[in-house]
Image (cartoon, rainbow, N blue to C red; front, top):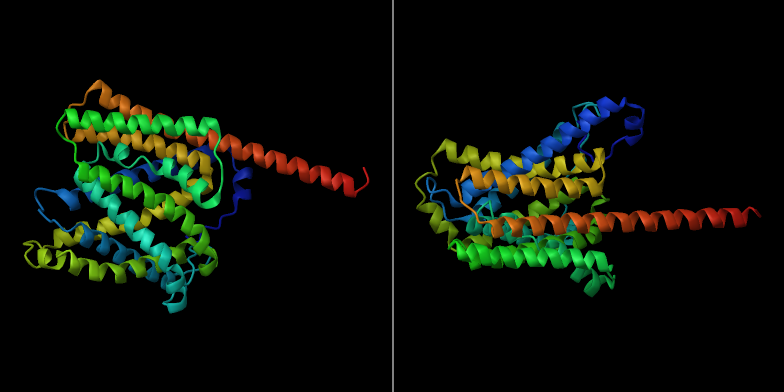
Length: 350
């Protein structure tokens, strides 16, 4: 089990097709299971009538704490376990690195907090639509911050996503289940997801390009920054009056939620490694579709045809955008390879 994120992809080329297909299937299924389970588990912790815990910041803080503990534990374990069985980069508390990662950590806190608040107020079935604007924000921020233009087909895909978003809001309102607070949190979460991707690229050199070191420092900063927020928003008082603080079941569920939050980073990396970034995005879109269907049946909800249409527009637009960007990247790569080939021929005098 290599957790370093570095894999020998060349070995996969020599594997029998059936074995390779089985591995890919297992990895995709694992990603779906971890991701969908984590969403339902977080919904339970954030908004369960049986728990009655109104402390979303504390739930998020505790999950960050579990991630820090897991990163440190795996780092220590990798010192005694042979490298061919397990790899994990060494992590330690470094104030200089913590300061370098701090801007990203602020965005990271916003992302995970607004994600959980959106889930708390909107529920699992509408969660996909509620925070579907990350693709739209990617286009806007790429233009505003990086001066990168976007193709017409990609813009049309974003238009479909926006149409599905507004139709979904209309249908949730018609059914009397719309939460404008949840919509606001979903928009903010989408913005933070886009900003997180941009800041991650900037900060990675500070941790030697290691995603796991970045995860460790990001969550250490988050744990520190959450403490004053818990005090400001009165969640410490809420916890002091919570009647299940002595319950092993409650802390077990909280810890499992933290473990799943850590695991999603690992299985995401695995899915990208065994497939491709494009396939990972397509898998994520399909997973969101399955998650919505499961939520509707699990919570025994009745949804209108237009409600389902809004979800189809969001998921279809996201799929088309991913496909278009994948084709554009492949075209750019082919052009670069052709240019390099021509330069090599010219230098060789051919």
